[in-house]
Image 1: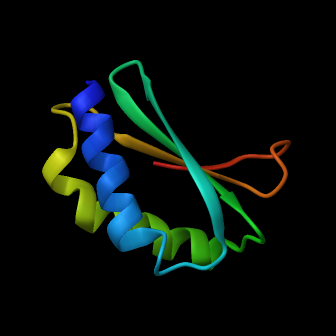
Image 2: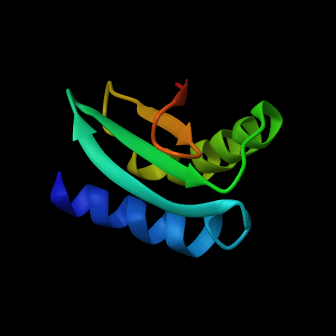
Length: 85
């Protein structure tokens, strides 16, 4: 799974992070067969989150674990997380 997380990180660094200046950083974690991506944002709105999730799903579909999902979390200060599946 480590190689898959590396691939996800490379794709995010290349295509997602440069496109969305509100992304401060992100973390990746493998959790119960799913890959969890937490975006630390300068500010967050539901529409922006949905755009990021759509772009990620389009780019990351080639590395999605079989029968599992990407879980996207967004936070501005680490206290409240908004989750998209």
